[in-house]
Length: 204
Image (cartoon, rainbow, N blue to C red; front, side, top):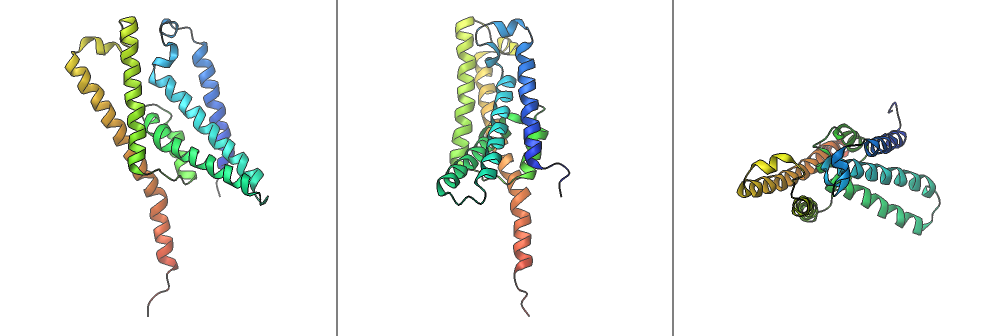
């Protein structure tokens, strides 16, 4: 039995992210006052993603608690939608984006304590590509407006090198999505297969 119920753990993680975001916004940095504010940094966007994800997790836990034993089909339908949203957010955003920061341990704990249904590989990769390209376009737009790159090293490389870098980051995000899919399968599908094998009647 877990020392700390996963529902309590999710609430604690959500509160910690909310606290981090409040402190982050309270820090007066020159870069936060320029065009795009904190939203031009992937680290800040990732913190928001994690807070939203664990917020959905907590909401799902509460809905599950309220729905349990009620027999209300509409409530159960809404709960299934929440679970699908939670799983999609983990697969497409929380894990791939979170890997590049120190929030990874929280995501790994979540993956270990609860089973998540990944979307089809094609739709999942399409979604993470959309996010990656969207952020790249956002970075380029900020440079177009301000004449400065969000990440200073981009100023010191040529246009061709930037294209290679942006393409490589998109491929990396796709690889991280596949890593999360494989990890989720390893954690949950392998033990299930072993249990099913044990339950099969032995042939004499």
